[in-house]
Length: 461
Ligand SMILES: Cc1ncc(COP(=O)(O)O)c(C=O)c1O
Image (cartoon, rainbow, N blue to C red; front, side, top):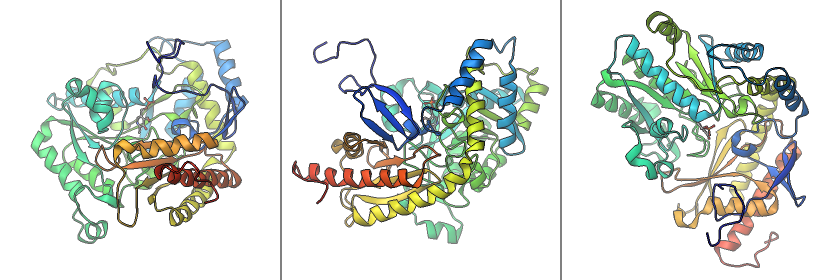
C-alpha cells in the first residue's frame, strides 16, 4: 500500500489528489480550502443548471419525508406520473412512454434489452445483435460498453464483451473513410452509411436487433455533430431491415444543444431515446428511456404487457422529485433561449481563441456542448502523441487556475486525438463565459510553456 492515501475511498485514480468540495453556487464549486472552480463542463455534462439550487433540494426532501421508496412492481407515485408526463410531452409525438433508471448506462442497457424482447416476441427470435459506432460512448455496464466504441474503456474487458458490431461515426473533420464532406453531399454517396448496410448484410438482417448512436458524439469525440442528412439515411436503413434505432441522448438531452432533444435537430424520429444527466441536472441519479408507441403496442400484444427487466431503484420517488423540480427550473429560467444565445456567443469566442492558439485545430458542437480538438501544430497538422496526455494536462493547468473542463482522448481512432469539451451550466451568463474563455486562454499559454519545458512561461507571454 506504499504511496496509497490512508482513507477508505476507492478513488477513480489512486495516484491523484482530489479537492474536497464543500458546496457550490451557480457555475462555481468551492473546496474546503476555499478555492473556487468555475465548472465549465457541468461536472460530466450533468449539472446542467449549476449548483446550490434550493428548490430542487427542498422538493427532494419533501418527497423523502412523504414516501422515500416504493417498489414499482407493486406501487407507483404521483411524482413518477407527473415526471413521465412532462418528459413524454417534451419528446417527439410518437414517443410517449417513459421508463426510469438511475444512470445512462442502465438506460442504454434497458433499451438494448427492450429492442431484443420486442423482436423476439414479434416472432423474430434470431434478432439479437447490436450495431454501434467506434469512438462513441454508451456506458460502462457490459451491454452498454459492448455497444459503445470507446477503445480505452473497452480494451481491459475485451474478452467479456458481447459480440456486437461497429462502424465509424462520421467525423468529417478527419473522415475515417478518407472522404470529403462536400463530395459526399454533392454525390449523395456516403461511405459512413453504406458501411452500416454492409455490416447489416454481413451479420444478416434477420440477426440484427438495434442500431445505437449519439446524435452529437460527446465524451469520446468532443461534441461532434453529424453531417446534414446522415441520420435520415440511418433511419431509412433501420426501417428497411426492421432494426430498432436507439438514439442516446444521455448527454445531449434536456436542452444541452439548444432544443429539448438533439433528435429534433437531426430531423428523425427514434424508436427509443435514452436520457440521463440533464433530466435531474445532476441533483439525483436519474436517467431512462422514452419509447415509441409501436414498441409499446408490441409489448401489450406479444409480451403480455411486460418488459422482462427492472431495477430496484427504477422511478425512485426522491430522484423523480428532483427531476420534476429541475424541469420547473428549466422552464422558469428560459433555459432553451439562454442556450441558443450563449451557445452562439461561446462558439464565436472559441473561434477567436483558435486564431490565437495553433493548438486548436477545430471548434465544433451545438448549443452549449462545444468541443475543441487539440493538436501539437495546426499548420502542419501534427498530432499529440497519446503519451503526452495533452488534454488531461491542459485541464490540470486550468484546474490550478480555477476552471474545470472535460478532457478526452482517442477522438480520431480510439488512441490518437485530443479534445476538450466546454459545456457550462445552461444558465451561464456572458460574463461567466468571458471568464471561461479567459481561463482557457491562460491555460493554453501555460500549457505552451510546459511543453517547451519553460517553467518561467507566464500568462503575459
Ligand atoms: C452519451 C452517453 N451515454 C451514456 C452514458 C453513461 O451514463 P452514466 O455514466 O450515467 O451511466 C454517458 C455518460 O457520460 C454518455 O455521455
